[in-house]
Length: 245
Image (cartoon, rainbow, N blue to C red; front, side, top):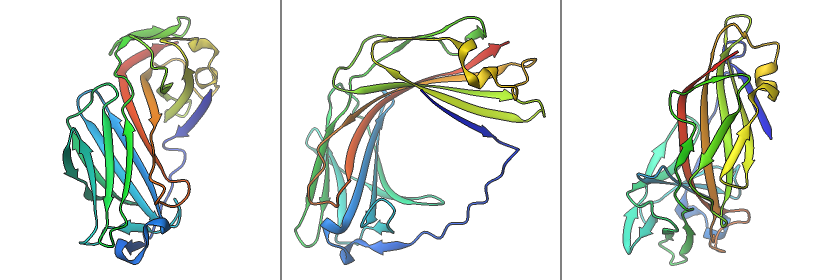
């Protein structure tokens, strides 16, 4: 079980980042670290590709005009397009394919002909039977997470996130992770440090979110640098729950 805690107004992080970029035609495939993550919410799958020079901490690889990344699903190829945020450069595509064990092939096509093909299958789809959106909980009552089945070929975890108020009337964001080895998990809310902490103003309610994720690793091309990976995930969430002390 892993706990995370952030007080939003107690600490402000000033992030100053200078993102360096390298054109892909300047780097051989074996000098490129690749991280591919595919996340399905049951309606569509987001394909995200990050390429860095050397390793995961290297400069961002920006595809030259002669290179491309493609996701191939059911014999249809979709080109990933560049997406730039504040700190990073990656390549994305949204695909309407979410079936159980759906295979995705990620192809890195290169002008020098040294291509890299990787593949992964989606975990099994699932439904969260309990709890429900907008459900209310008392600190003395257990919170039961019940799924409609298991996936022996994937690793599952539950994240309980909370937004409470501390004694200084500030928002306190916390979360705790639980391994999920069956289709059922019972969480004793009263026993969690995140709610028994003296920081929490128990005269006010907390907002809760439950996220359930199933992860499955695939086969990454040996053409990439060491520690490259490809991973898929089925993700579901229950939101707007309320905790009363």
